[in-house]
Length: 211
Image 1 (spheres, one colour):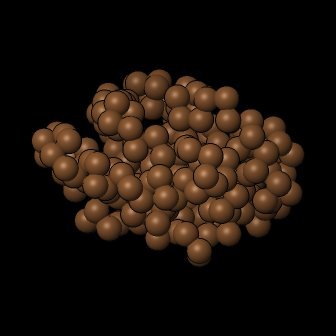
Image 2: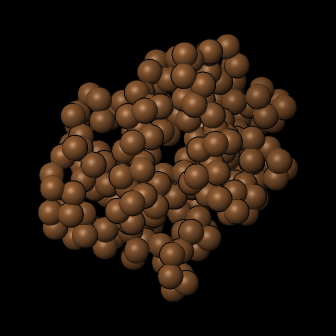
């Protein structure tokens, strides 16, 4: 596994290409059609990964992300994904599955706006978009934790992977343009530009190598 790994593709392969997972998600969303659940989940994952990448452009946020991964997200959640989605997984550390808490830190007051985007791209009600974001936020953090543990990634590696994932998705992910408009840092309409510049800042001995 390298820093060129596409985190979103890994999540899509593990979750959205698994009919049992998609069926469970559709049930958790009130029995919506499976194609709607899959579309909404892809948009939600796009929003979460893009938000993580955007937040990591600031050193203090990047360090906070690493601390959260090491403290609460060791990646074991992905080994119990079906139990988690069906509500049967009870981790020793409750923060591992605290989707609402993750979203407060990650999206802040933009949570409801992003939830509406998730809902509108799939034909769901806005509250179901919010529920899906809460369900998937711990899984995305778990994927980062698993990557850190298995690949030995340090902070700069994780930041590079997040940035590279977003850049690789540009132009091929129909939800990306909509999501990045809402997550734009400087008001120029392109969070992609903000994210693309993080590599120079992170790698210029800012963090002194892997941590």
